[in-house]
Length: 161
Image (tube, rainbow, N blue to C red; front, side, top):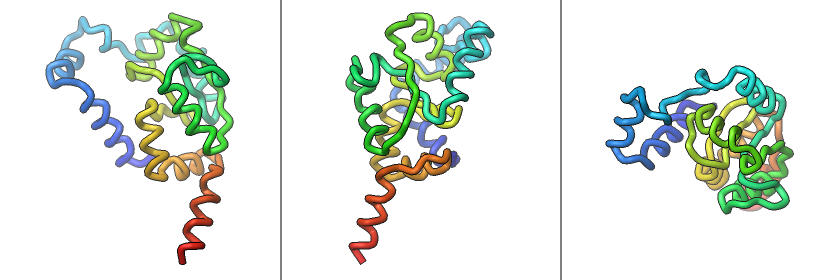
C-alpha cells in the first residue's frame, strides 16, 4: 500500500476530530480510545486475526450482505459488488464484544471496517474515495483480484483515442 494512501487516511481520520479530542485521546492514559489491539484478550484477537488473514477481503458491517442495517455498510457492499469482489463479512450487531473490540483492534471508531489481504483499509469514506479516484482497481489488483471496472476503464481509454 502506498505511503501517500496511508498519509491520506491519517489526515482524514484526524480531520474528523477536534484538536482538543486528538490531544486528550493521545496523551491521557485513562482514555478508553487509547486501548490498542495489544490490550485485547489474546484468544479473541487470534479469532479476529484468523478471520481477517484467511480472507482476501474481510469486512465488519452492521447487518448482513443481503440486508445491511446501515447506509455506510450498504455503500461498502455496493462498491464491492460494482467491482465484482468476493468477500467475507461479520455482522457486528450480532456480537457486542466483537463490536467493541474491533474499535480497539483497528484503532478505528466506526463501522464498516474493510480489510484487504489482512491489512486494514478504512471505512466507507476511504473505500468510496478509492473507488471514485480509480485507486481501488489498483489496490484490488495488488491482492490478486481483477476488478470488473478495470475492463470498463480500459474500454473507455481505447475508445477515446
